Image 1 (cartoon, helix red, strand yellow):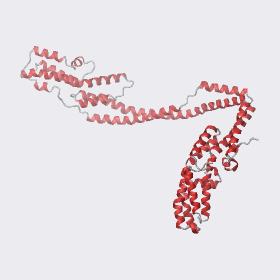
Image 2 (cartoon, helix red, strand yellow):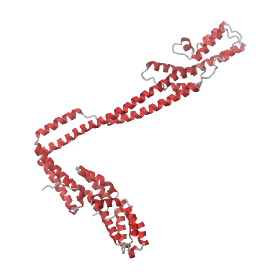
Image 3 (cartoon, rainbow, N blue to C red):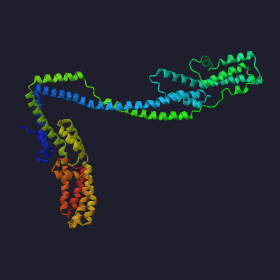
Image 4 (cartoon, rainbow, N blue to C red):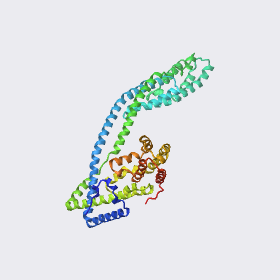
Length: 477
């Protein structure tokens, strides 16, 4: 008669009838043989059942994904709303900043003598102007950039020209020049790099240089007579006063930067959420729905349910024995890391029953800490407990003073394993503790009951056993 062990509480594993390893493994083999026989005898139905289970799992996955997707999409929408709000908040400081750069900062620079440092700052700020989607503005920015990039070369070209012509003017003591000389002067002036821009004035100009050229041609009409001061000061003037406007631009840039940082962070959050969205294959999903209905029509559902129930019961029973044999029973043995690792791997590979896998996951931390627990108990006994026993002459006289007994017992209660032992004892659920350590603690409690009288050798044996257990050197079988 089939016994469904999945109905037994896991705490039932403390029973003696499942401690026989040889019998357990024979039972596991017999149950696996039964499962294999069921699968072979009812191959068609079992195959259909397994296919239906796989299809149903895929259908459930798609349906669950739809629910999760809806939750994720709601979060994406919330993030996008925040992005929109920050973008709206960004537009105001950006627009004001760009207006100051284009209508105040750049005009201030090109209306003053060339200054390399100020010119570089103007070029840098032009680079941050938002021109996306605005071709007209982009054209204006490109034109301003071209003027600023050439401003230094234009100035140098004119300065070299002025220095060259000044030699003749000085030699003539700034007297009026003849027509031949002034004609040559103008022809040479036309060769300077800014003259074409100045002459055509079709693609923007640099006002400061334009005024300089205008003034130079005005002096030419006078033949440069008595024009030394005007000539020598042609490229001089007050530098651009940009301190005030630069502070305003920097402040606006700071405000814009805060909004940009928020937008970037939210965009990353949105992108991360979008990567979590699952896009099911609708064709596969529809095909699974049709195939599942077809299989249901092809097999006797009542017989299939009966076979499925029998398979599940035998699987649960097999898994129960496997988990008991290869994992839970290790609690009865001294610590052995190799056996523990092999047992965990075996259970994970062969057990299908969910609650048994969950049980192993929940108690694996305790088993991994097995040697740490044993060491801590040994240290407590070999340290403060032994010192107090010697202080109160317990090994010879025994200890019956309640306060003294409590002090001797206290170091044990501070070990990491003690709460686990106490909980198992209180709930009568030995499945949540390490039975090998529990047996050792029973020996300790027996020594405490007699106040450790004549127990020095027994105490030493217990400490040695704990340390050997922690080291993994005790025989496993």
